[in-house]
Image 1 (cartoon, rainbow, N blue to C red):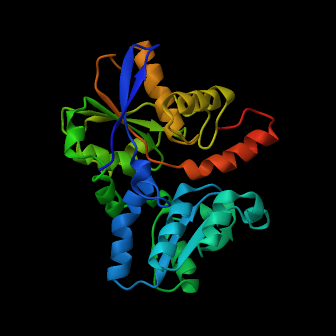
Image 2: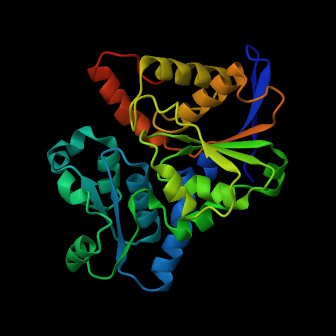
Image 3: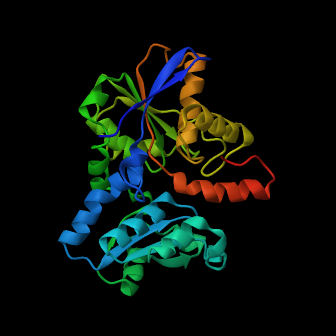
Length: 296
Protein backbone atom coordinates (compact mmCIF):
# COMPACT_ATOMS: atom_id res chain seq x y z
CA UNK A 1 0.00 0.00 0.00
CA UNK A 2 1.28 3.48 -0.89
CA UNK A 3 2.03 5.58 2.17
CA UNK A 4 0.28 8.94 2.21
CA UNK A 5 2.63 11.85 2.88
CA UNK A 6 1.68 14.91 4.95
CA UNK A 7 2.79 18.27 3.55
CA UNK A 8 2.85 20.96 6.23
CA UNK A 9 2.88 24.50 4.92
CA UNK A 10 3.91 26.81 7.75
CA UNK A 11 3.34 29.96 5.72
CA UNK A 12 -0.27 28.99 5.01
CA UNK A 13 -0.81 27.43 8.46
CA UNK A 14 -2.33 24.41 6.70
CA UNK A 15 -1.49 20.90 5.63
CA UNK A 16 -2.26 18.79 2.60
CA UNK A 17 -1.88 15.03 2.24
CA UNK A 18 -0.34 13.57 -0.91
CA UNK A 19 -0.82 10.07 -2.28
CA UNK A 20 2.30 9.11 -4.29
CA UNK A 21 0.55 6.94 -6.88
CA UNK A 22 3.51 7.52 -9.20
CA UNK A 23 5.46 5.02 -7.09
CA UNK A 24 3.14 2.15 -8.04
CA UNK A 25 5.56 0.98 -10.77
CA UNK A 26 9.11 1.90 -11.75
CA UNK A 27 8.45 2.54 -15.47
CA UNK A 28 4.66 2.42 -15.96
CA UNK A 29 3.95 5.29 -13.62
CA UNK A 30 0.87 6.39 -11.71
CA UNK A 31 -2.36 6.85 -13.59
CA UNK A 32 -0.85 5.38 -16.76
CA UNK A 33 -0.45 2.05 -14.95
CA UNK A 34 -4.08 2.31 -13.81
CA UNK A 35 -5.36 3.10 -17.29
CA UNK A 36 -3.37 0.39 -19.03
CA UNK A 37 -4.01 -2.42 -16.52
CA UNK A 38 -7.36 -3.72 -17.79
CA UNK A 39 -6.73 -2.71 -21.41
CA UNK A 40 -3.62 -4.88 -21.50
CA UNK A 41 -5.47 -7.75 -19.83
CA UNK A 42 -8.15 -7.55 -22.53
CA UNK A 43 -5.57 -7.42 -25.33
CA UNK A 44 -3.84 -10.51 -23.95
CA UNK A 45 -6.99 -12.51 -23.19
CA UNK A 46 -8.42 -11.86 -26.66
CA UNK A 47 -5.14 -12.71 -28.40
CA UNK A 48 -4.49 -9.38 -30.06
CA UNK A 49 -1.15 -9.21 -31.86
CA UNK A 50 -0.15 -5.91 -30.27
CA UNK A 51 -1.15 -2.46 -29.00
CA UNK A 52 -1.62 0.67 -31.11
CA UNK A 53 -2.04 4.04 -29.46
CA UNK A 54 -1.53 7.78 -29.94
CA UNK A 55 0.47 10.63 -28.42
CA UNK A 56 2.48 13.79 -28.82
CA UNK A 57 6.16 14.60 -28.53
CA UNK A 58 6.53 14.12 -24.76
CA UNK A 59 3.52 11.90 -24.05
CA UNK A 60 3.52 10.08 -20.70
CA UNK A 61 1.06 7.62 -22.23
CA UNK A 62 3.40 6.75 -25.09
CA UNK A 63 6.30 6.16 -22.71
CA UNK A 64 4.18 4.04 -20.36
CA UNK A 65 2.65 1.95 -23.14
CA UNK A 66 6.08 1.26 -24.60
CA UNK A 67 7.42 0.22 -21.19
CA UNK A 68 4.41 -2.01 -20.50
CA UNK A 69 4.71 -3.63 -23.91
CA UNK A 70 8.35 -4.41 -23.29
CA UNK A 71 7.62 -5.85 -19.84
CA UNK A 72 4.84 -8.08 -21.16
CA UNK A 73 6.48 -8.87 -24.51
CA UNK A 74 3.61 -7.27 -26.43
CA UNK A 75 4.46 -5.38 -29.67
CA UNK A 76 3.49 -1.70 -29.48
CA UNK A 77 2.91 1.03 -32.06
CA UNK A 78 2.82 4.72 -31.20
CA UNK A 79 1.15 7.04 -33.70
CA UNK A 80 3.00 10.30 -33.09
CA UNK A 81 1.66 13.80 -33.82
CA UNK A 82 4.13 15.63 -36.07
CA UNK A 83 6.09 14.18 -39.00
CA UNK A 84 9.01 16.50 -38.25
CA UNK A 85 9.72 14.63 -35.00
CA UNK A 86 11.10 11.66 -36.95
CA UNK A 87 14.35 13.53 -37.62
CA UNK A 88 14.58 14.90 -34.07
CA UNK A 89 14.27 11.72 -32.01
CA UNK A 90 17.78 12.08 -30.54
CA UNK A 91 16.62 15.35 -28.99
CA UNK A 92 13.42 13.86 -27.59
CA UNK A 93 13.94 11.78 -24.45
CA UNK A 94 10.37 10.42 -24.44
CA UNK A 95 10.33 9.12 -28.01
CA UNK A 96 13.90 7.87 -27.70
CA UNK A 97 12.88 5.90 -24.60
CA UNK A 98 9.76 4.51 -26.30
CA UNK A 99 11.84 3.34 -29.24
CA UNK A 100 14.38 1.74 -26.89
CA UNK A 101 11.52 -0.28 -25.39
CA UNK A 102 10.75 -1.67 -28.83
CA UNK A 103 7.83 0.58 -29.76
CA UNK A 104 7.39 1.23 -33.48
CA UNK A 105 6.86 4.96 -33.96
CA UNK A 106 4.53 5.96 -36.77
CA UNK A 107 4.89 9.71 -37.40
CA UNK A 108 1.88 11.42 -38.98
CA UNK A 109 0.97 14.97 -39.93
CA UNK A 110 -1.00 17.07 -37.52
CA UNK A 111 -3.97 17.07 -39.88
CA UNK A 112 -3.97 13.26 -40.03
CA UNK A 113 -3.55 13.05 -36.27
CA UNK A 114 -6.77 15.02 -35.76
CA UNK A 115 -8.57 12.03 -37.31
CA UNK A 116 -7.35 9.68 -34.55
CA UNK A 117 -10.91 8.97 -33.38
CA UNK A 118 -12.36 8.62 -36.87
CA UNK A 119 -13.42 5.04 -37.72
CA UNK A 120 -12.29 5.28 -41.36
CA UNK A 121 -8.84 6.55 -40.36
CA UNK A 122 -8.44 3.84 -37.73
CA UNK A 123 -9.41 1.21 -40.29
CA UNK A 124 -6.72 2.56 -42.61
CA UNK A 125 -4.10 2.43 -39.86
CA UNK A 126 -5.03 -1.11 -38.91
CA UNK A 127 -4.47 -2.30 -42.48
CA UNK A 128 -0.77 -1.94 -41.69
CA UNK A 129 -1.09 -3.22 -38.11
CA UNK A 130 -3.59 -6.05 -38.36
CA UNK A 131 -5.21 -7.35 -35.16
CA UNK A 132 -3.70 -4.60 -33.00
CA UNK A 133 -5.72 -3.46 -29.99
CA UNK A 134 -6.38 0.29 -30.16
CA UNK A 135 -6.07 2.45 -27.03
CA UNK A 136 -7.04 6.13 -27.45
CA UNK A 137 -4.76 9.11 -26.83
CA UNK A 138 -4.11 9.47 -23.12
CA UNK A 139 -5.44 5.96 -22.52
CA UNK A 140 -8.95 7.01 -21.51
CA UNK A 141 -11.74 4.51 -22.18
CA UNK A 142 -14.14 2.47 -20.05
CA UNK A 143 -11.43 -0.01 -18.99
CA UNK A 144 -9.12 2.87 -18.04
CA UNK A 145 -11.84 4.29 -15.79
CA UNK A 146 -12.14 0.87 -14.14
CA UNK A 147 -8.44 0.96 -13.37
CA UNK A 148 -8.51 4.53 -12.08
CA UNK A 149 -11.35 3.62 -9.71
CA UNK A 150 -8.75 1.59 -7.84
CA UNK A 151 -6.62 4.64 -6.95
CA UNK A 152 -8.64 5.39 -3.82
CA UNK A 153 -8.39 2.99 -0.91
CA UNK A 154 -10.55 2.71 2.21
CA UNK A 155 -8.31 5.09 4.15
CA UNK A 156 -8.78 7.79 1.50
CA UNK A 157 -12.51 7.99 2.20
CA UNK A 158 -11.85 10.08 5.31
CA UNK A 159 -10.78 13.13 3.26
CA UNK A 160 -13.11 16.07 2.54
CA UNK A 161 -11.50 17.06 -0.76
CA UNK A 162 -9.61 14.94 -3.30
CA UNK A 163 -7.59 16.71 -5.98
CA UNK A 164 -6.01 15.52 -9.20
CA UNK A 165 -4.53 16.90 -12.38
CA UNK A 166 -6.67 16.44 -15.51
CA UNK A 167 -5.59 15.63 -19.06
CA UNK A 168 -8.18 13.57 -20.93
CA UNK A 169 -10.48 13.17 -17.92
CA UNK A 170 -10.12 9.45 -17.27
CA UNK A 171 -8.36 9.68 -13.92
CA UNK A 172 -10.79 12.14 -12.39
CA UNK A 173 -13.75 10.06 -13.65
CA UNK A 174 -12.35 7.04 -11.83
CA UNK A 175 -11.89 9.07 -8.65
CA UNK A 176 -15.43 10.43 -8.89
CA UNK A 177 -16.87 6.94 -9.26
CA UNK A 178 -15.01 5.50 -6.27
CA UNK A 179 -15.43 8.47 -3.92
CA UNK A 180 -18.14 9.01 -1.35
CA UNK A 181 -20.98 11.38 -2.34
CA UNK A 182 -20.01 13.75 0.51
CA UNK A 183 -16.46 14.12 -0.78
CA UNK A 184 -15.60 16.84 -3.29
CA UNK A 185 -13.39 15.90 -6.24
CA UNK A 186 -11.51 18.86 -7.74
CA UNK A 187 -9.73 18.56 -11.08
CA UNK A 188 -6.98 20.89 -12.28
CA UNK A 189 -6.89 20.79 -16.11
CA UNK A 190 -3.47 20.95 -17.73
CA UNK A 191 -5.10 22.27 -20.91
CA UNK A 192 -7.12 25.37 -21.60
CA UNK A 193 -10.38 25.28 -23.49
CA UNK A 194 -13.12 24.20 -21.10
CA UNK A 195 -14.16 21.16 -23.17
CA UNK A 196 -13.47 18.47 -20.57
CA UNK A 197 -16.79 18.55 -18.71
CA UNK A 198 -18.59 16.65 -21.48
CA UNK A 199 -15.83 14.02 -21.70
CA UNK A 200 -15.86 13.44 -17.94
CA UNK A 201 -19.65 13.19 -17.86
CA UNK A 202 -19.46 10.24 -20.28
CA UNK A 203 -17.91 8.16 -17.50
CA UNK A 204 -18.65 9.85 -14.17
CA UNK A 205 -21.44 8.32 -12.08
CA UNK A 206 -21.68 11.13 -9.49
CA UNK A 207 -21.92 14.92 -9.54
CA UNK A 208 -19.60 15.66 -6.59
CA UNK A 209 -16.89 17.22 -8.76
CA UNK A 210 -15.76 20.39 -10.45
CA UNK A 211 -12.88 21.63 -12.58
CA UNK A 212 -10.74 24.60 -11.59
CA UNK A 213 -9.44 25.96 -14.88
CA UNK A 214 -7.36 28.90 -13.64
CA UNK A 215 -4.11 26.98 -13.21
CA UNK A 216 -3.17 25.71 -16.68
CA UNK A 217 -0.34 28.28 -17.00
CA UNK A 218 -1.10 28.95 -20.65
CA UNK A 219 -2.10 25.46 -21.76
CA UNK A 220 -0.80 21.96 -22.27
CA UNK A 221 2.97 21.61 -21.68
CA UNK A 222 3.23 25.36 -21.01
CA UNK A 223 5.13 26.57 -17.96
CA UNK A 224 6.58 29.86 -16.78
CA UNK A 225 9.29 30.83 -14.29
CA UNK A 226 6.72 31.12 -11.49
CA UNK A 227 5.68 27.47 -11.91
CA UNK A 228 9.28 26.22 -12.21
CA UNK A 229 10.30 28.11 -9.07
CA UNK A 230 7.30 26.61 -7.25
CA UNK A 231 8.28 23.10 -8.38
CA UNK A 232 11.86 23.52 -7.24
CA UNK A 233 10.84 24.97 -3.87
CA UNK A 234 8.36 22.11 -3.43
CA UNK A 235 11.00 19.48 -4.12
CA UNK A 236 13.48 21.16 -1.77
CA UNK A 237 10.90 21.44 1.01
CA UNK A 238 9.12 18.09 0.75
CA UNK A 239 11.66 15.92 -1.14
CA UNK A 240 8.95 15.08 -3.69
CA UNK A 241 9.39 15.78 -7.42
CA UNK A 242 6.50 17.21 -9.44
CA UNK A 243 6.09 17.23 -13.20
CA UNK A 244 5.59 20.55 -15.06
CA UNK A 245 2.63 19.44 -17.20
CA UNK A 246 0.25 18.03 -14.57
CA UNK A 247 1.08 17.67 -10.88
CA UNK A 248 2.94 20.97 -10.42
CA UNK A 249 -0.09 22.88 -11.68
CA UNK A 250 -2.35 20.92 -9.35
CA UNK A 251 -0.20 21.55 -6.27
CA UNK A 252 0.22 25.23 -7.14
CA UNK A 253 -3.55 25.49 -7.46
CA UNK A 254 -4.19 23.74 -4.14
CA UNK A 255 -1.79 25.99 -2.20
CA UNK A 256 -3.15 29.09 -3.94
CA UNK A 257 -6.74 28.08 -3.13
CA UNK A 258 -5.84 27.59 0.55
CA UNK A 259 -4.17 30.99 0.62
CA UNK A 260 -7.19 32.72 -0.93
CA UNK A 261 -9.69 30.82 1.22
CA UNK A 262 -11.26 28.91 -1.64
CA UNK A 263 -10.17 25.78 0.23
CA UNK A 264 -10.72 26.13 4.01
CA UNK A 265 -7.50 25.75 6.02
CA UNK A 266 -9.10 23.07 8.19
CA UNK A 267 -10.31 20.96 5.25
CA UNK A 268 -8.81 17.48 4.92
CA UNK A 269 -7.28 17.61 1.44
CA UNK A 270 -5.77 14.69 -0.48
CA UNK A 271 -3.75 15.33 -3.64
CA UNK A 272 -3.15 12.42 -6.02
CA UNK A 273 0.36 12.43 -7.52
CA UNK A 274 -0.24 10.73 -10.85
CA UNK A 275 3.35 10.73 -12.12
CA UNK A 276 4.53 12.13 -15.44
CA UNK A 277 8.07 12.67 -14.19
CA UNK A 278 9.57 11.32 -17.42
CA UNK A 279 8.55 14.61 -19.06
CA UNK A 280 10.94 16.69 -16.96
CA UNK A 281 13.93 16.04 -19.22
CA UNK A 282 12.09 17.31 -22.28
CA UNK A 283 10.81 20.40 -20.48
CA UNK A 284 14.31 21.21 -19.23
CA UNK A 285 15.59 21.12 -22.80
CA UNK A 286 13.01 23.75 -23.74
CA UNK A 287 13.83 25.85 -20.68
CA UNK A 288 17.55 25.74 -21.44
CA UNK A 289 16.90 26.88 -24.99
CA UNK A 290 15.04 29.87 -23.56
CA UNK A 291 17.79 30.43 -20.96
CA UNK A 292 15.30 30.02 -18.13
CA UNK A 293 15.56 28.32 -14.74
CA UNK A 294 15.46 24.52 -15.08
CA UNK A 295 13.72 21.91 -12.96
CA UNK A 296 15.98 20.38 -10.33
